[in-house]
Length: 125
Image 1 (tube, one colour):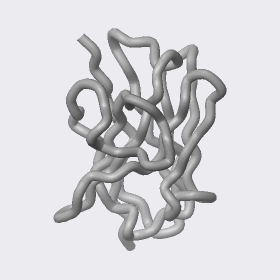
Image 2: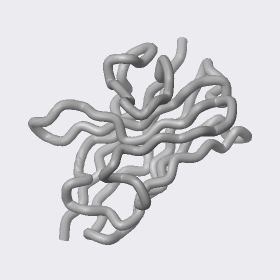
Image 3: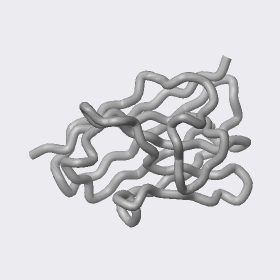
Image 4: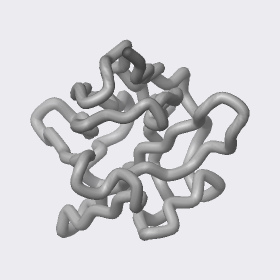
């Protein structure tokens, strides 16, 4: 059974950084499109970033471009999301998922399996 587990969230001040990690069991992540999503209180879940397996192509939501970086660590079978210059509006629960296809739209409706517990990111002074 495929299971993805998110970690690395926490409380950080505006302008700070966090590095989230998505670890998988039962699946070799390098073979799949992997996406990061977030859901803020009272809002719908939306795509943050994703990475393709073949050429490592990536997409980012417009508000994350230049601040977030998605990457793979094949030796650890993980996908990381480096988040810099964090803003209060980045506060949300962050989830990773196997996607049908990594593309600019990053639809939360087009994933395989179910959502994990996520990891809470809070940006506040």
